[in-house]
Amino acid sequence: MACDMSTNELSGYADFEWAVQLNRFSLKMIGLWPEETGSSQEKLFSNLRFSCVIIVITCVCTTPSLYLLLKVWGDMMAMIDNILFTLPLLSLSMKLFIMWWKKETLSSLMTMIVHDWVKSKSRDERDIMMRRAQDARLIIMFSYIIMGLSLTILIVTSIFGYTLRHVTNVTDASRPLPLQAFYIYDISVSPQFELTFFIQCITLLMVALSYTGTDNFLGLLIFHICGQLENLTNRLYRMRKSTNFIAALRNNVMDHIRLIRSIAMIEDTFTLTLLQLFLYFGIMFCIYGFLVVTVIFEEKNVSLKRAIFLILVICTAFTHMCLYCAAGEFLVMKYEKVYNAVCECKWYTLETTEAKSLIFLLLRTNKPLYITAGKIVPMTMSTFCSILKTSGGYISVLLANRN
Image 1 (cartoon, one colour):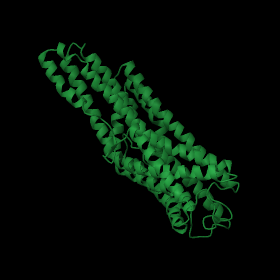
Image 2 (spheres, helix red, strand yellow):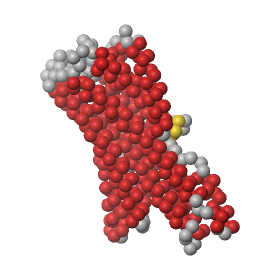
Image 3 (cartoon, one colour):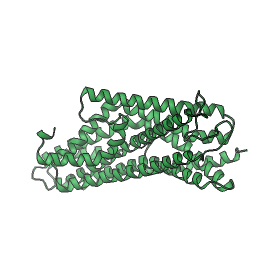
Image 4 (cartoon, rainbow, N blue to C red):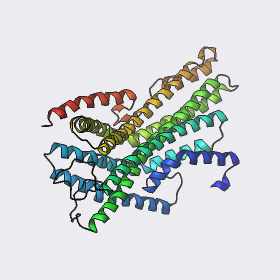
């Protein structure tokens, strides 16, 4: 591929590699990176990696955790403690299957992104794209750090025999595992315990990479589209100074249609993911709020490690939900600027034919552009605040039914 590229295209492809390398690292390991080009053999190996990841997560984490939930049914604190791990695992499995199902669509989006990076563009356009890519990189780096700290605390404390969970005779053996689960064999003796501990650590690492990679991949797509909308806005402002207004308008309209279709593809791919995340975050926020009140403020001699772990897990869930809503809000803001640029084209100074051609673009940009959860709720910061407000109201209900 590199042999067929010019110097500018090679430079653009290098920028693309820099922009996506952190997202590619996690998704490629679990077999979900949508290759812009790839042979049938590469796709086969990718599907095999994905299948192995799903089987391991289901057999090692999800199924044993669900079975343990049935065993502790009726003990409110034990159930809540179990749901803190079980619900994210179920949510993750759904997200992984959706991304695998829509992999071809995502591959076409990645092909479009590669084309945007390698095509000829001005320095200002490249700088805008680099800034938006840097925004996406900072978010995923923060997510890696938070997820890594949570996983490290969970594993290290278990190694030294401490637990960050709600301890009962049903859920805990003499030696704690990182993940609360029930297995069909005796894990209290060696070497079953050591092997189970090691397998759980590897599986939890897969879970962390999958959770972070899938959530931040949407951020990568949205921030790239926002960069393209900024470039389109600047071209619209320059369009009225063009010597060939109709040709410039035609190119901008084609680019505008391309971006609208890209957003439609993104929404079609992630709308179910966003809907389940919308419900999942509301439930988790209620549970976390309940635990913070009961564990940190009401229980005596609270372990510092458990308090730190709860705060890190809350920050992780909060960051991932906020990422979706902030990215959606950012998209709405950038598209409003496109509409403003069209309105400021001074159509009254144009020729009649040129002014008429501008009407269709003006009508289309007047329609808001955003992503939705289940094609019902727009993902914006206003929606995020509404979730926090509604979920917070149910914390008092949990506290009232504690006893």
